[in-house]
Length: 349
Image 1 (cartoon, rainbow, N blue to C red):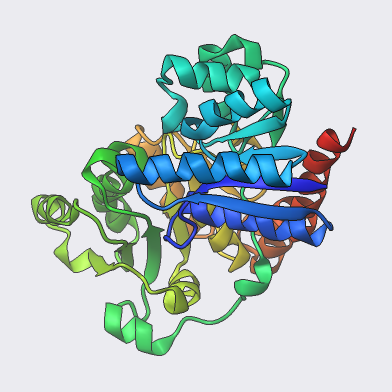
Image 2: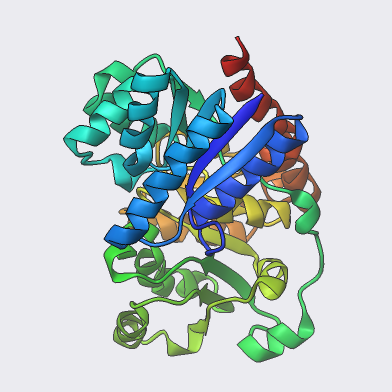
């Protein structure tokens, strides 16, 4: 089985890159021969070289299927399908398919399969390109729980963040002005005064870099929450697990991120109860892996945080060992391997 992966620069850091690399690794583990064609530059010349490399790869390697990782690449796949009859799938994530261009719609409509991570993305594509209705295959984010272990809070990190003896609310995301409403961190900040009125020893650790830091600081000043919020900035990969272990509740009330976001899975793999936004696909989390709230309901968000900090929730939802086992069962490598095998088998027929 030969698969050609059409992708953006996999050397960069990003959710799409991590998702693509996980697919490549698992596909190779099944015995498939996987080659990769990457877009390294979005300049006109870079795009031209990318197209030439892609067509050369198709002609010389003749893959059974092209795993196209972005809707923007799909017109190239449509050309090779039309000329050479080579099947392709298109992976869709969210915002990039909300308003597809006409040639992207054609690329989606002609794909053999549409690979989706999130239920809301599937609904968006179906609405914009009705021809895709019966072509979807679910291949959600996965988690290698071996990289995320249970453990006690790190005393050095507690001292650095002034959280010793405190109940920690934790959010990890990019702080971007364009994504502020989606990511939900401002909503957590605005819920914080209610939280600390009930749980005075609560502290909010909001981690991540981005262009919205100054706005975040202005909101903290407006709410007079300087004593209750820590902004450690971007977290190095080697410190990621220690930050998750610091949390008593991981909160990510996203509206359009897609569910479940990888940060929710990582927190669960560290045994931490989570709060997510009520996006399509989130129903199965409620009371089983965490709590689900309407991100625009500040009172509900504050109450959910208080419930977790006070452990006023079903015992299993705050049991580290059970949370870890449950997320592994649904989103671990074994479950992911089965989904990748199902994908490959479609094109073996």
